[in-house]
Image 1: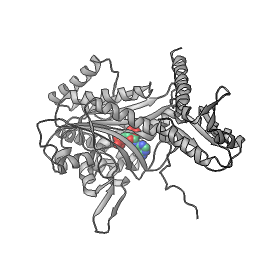
Image 2: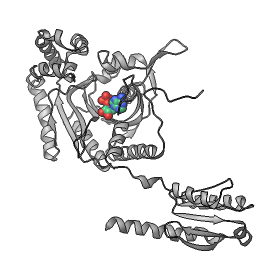
Image 3: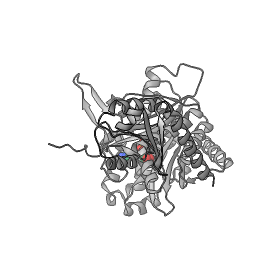
Length: 435
Ligand code: AMP
């Protein structure tokens, strides 16, 4: 019997794995530059952490969690997002008991949501996120936005759209909620099934509805900005002014409410539209939260966080020629071609690797033709050829696979010769880039 990957998951290898690592490295490196440190939390947590932390009115908690009882009868859930786990760790480890606030952490790893799989939508996908907890300042909010835009520009993304909104605090949202319930009361019977459920438990989410008929109704709904208190307005204004002062472009989207219940005040999403106009939807999102830490048993500290979906970023990079294909190549392929050459070839291979070059060889017997094909596939720059004649004389042939040059080199000179070839190669490479 053959197995396939479970529905909604995917195997990541080759250029995709390389690119995922690169995305992670770019985000993590920049996060450290911004004073974030890594946190790794468990892949599974007590189910209640998410019902309280993410909110039991959200789509994620209502419909999308991978929940099961462990053998001890505890209800366990595979994390559907990264923030709740970080908050739980801050509480469990009493990290909040410090004067050095905000606490700044980044995380990277898989999250799980039982969604309907489609392009760019998986049941297991990866998120990179940051959280900054403990200081209630618009500058902390702007900081994570600048971080995100900078990381995206390092990865080559040029058509990023920033959408922002303020959803106020709990009191404001309660008033707004009541206004929405009044407004939709006339029309709810004509709206979609999802809207019915949301009307009952979380009417703000109705603003997200993608059904065209419903959108006509939604267009006339009251707007959250008319409910913001003067303080909430001032806070949001400080954010927009700061973004303006950096020349950061954004669109205020009054229907942006986000799918997670913990947000308050500032919320934002990053969207991507390619040069050709294809809209990839949200690639990352986040916002400010004021009660999340308290909701999971900690002190009442505000924070801000965001998360990017790595699969979405990859999809865009793939479609828009942002992948670095050559990153897969080896420096050297050692061709072990004689009857009694494998011992020497393997020693030489090890020496080459210990000298810091990416190298591989054939352990089995292969024809010359097959080996050249293979060297091409692994994008090797040089071949080190070892046949029985070479072993007898303690030499190898080094062949530049791009230039068809070949030289005979004594065992003890191999590393120096490779160095010469490969650093010249690098020079040429840089020279090209400058041109
Ligand atoms: P969220 O935690 O819902 O705010 O999502 C943050 C980001 O994760 C989104 O902007 C997407 O890029 C990505 N994302 C969300 N759901 C999925 C999914 N099912 N598959 C792949 N990426 C996703």
